[in-house]
Amino acid sequence: MTYDLQKEKREAVDAGYRALDSLRAARENLDSAKNWGLWDMFGGGLISTMLKQSKMDSAKQNMERAKYDLHRFSQELRDVSISYDLDIEMGDFLSFADWFFDGFFVDWMVQDRINKAREQVSEAIRQVEDILRRLNDH
Image 1 (cartoon, rainbow, N blue to C red):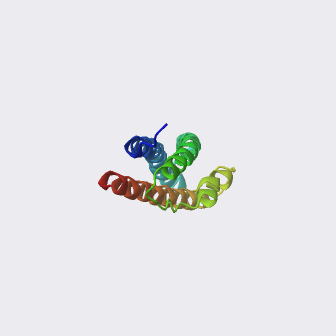
Image 2 (image 1 turned 90 degrees about the vertical axis):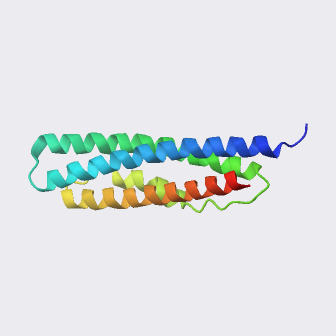
Image 3 (image 1 turned 135 degrees about the vertical axis):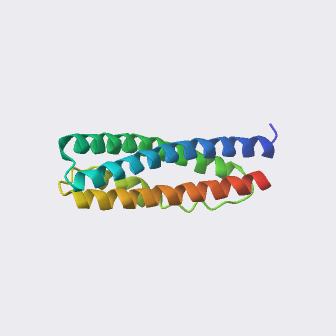
């Protein structure tokens, strides 16, 4: 069996785009949770709290999917003979769900966590896009 670099690159690119889809979906839900969180902070009441929580739950599901997709992307990158540095702190980045969704009661603390999680997701998106750009250029 011969090594097919182009096939390996296609597989890496496909895995990268799957990771981007998951990350973008998470960012979308975090954006929505952030907006509902702001509304909640200024007296939005039970409905805004429930909507914020729903968006946070959706973001958590997207992050679990992104965790899997980023792992697959990393594996596919190893198959490509050109070295790429997927510099995402997987432990910190993906474990945020453990503390982020742990039932904080103070709205401003939740809002701060939403903002930090969104920053991490945006940074991961930037890094994956950069790697995909470099993969497509070679």
